Image 1 (tube, one colour):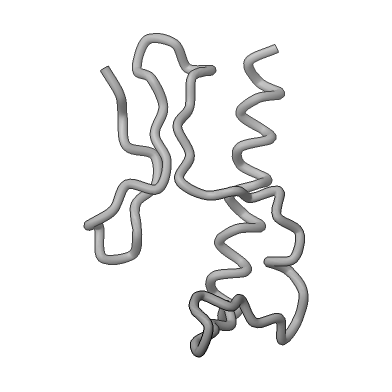
Image 2: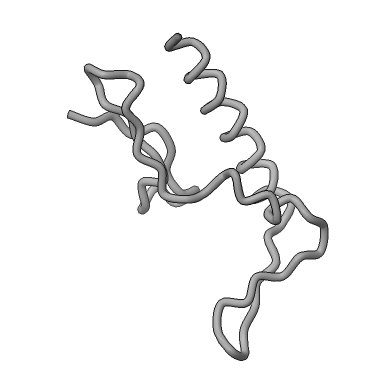
Length: 77
């Protein structure tokens, strides 16, 4: 059994979850260790002709998620 931990802002996509019984078992949709996420004005090329630039809310989400995830791992030990 799993428990939703994080979803997209519209609630349609589960971004992360944890196992109900085994609290150290997680599933994560994205790579928070990808440090380029935090660079100002960095654009991600998503196709040969299109790119996206994460907004400040997206960057803050990744920072807070990384901190929360790290704290949960520390608490398990």
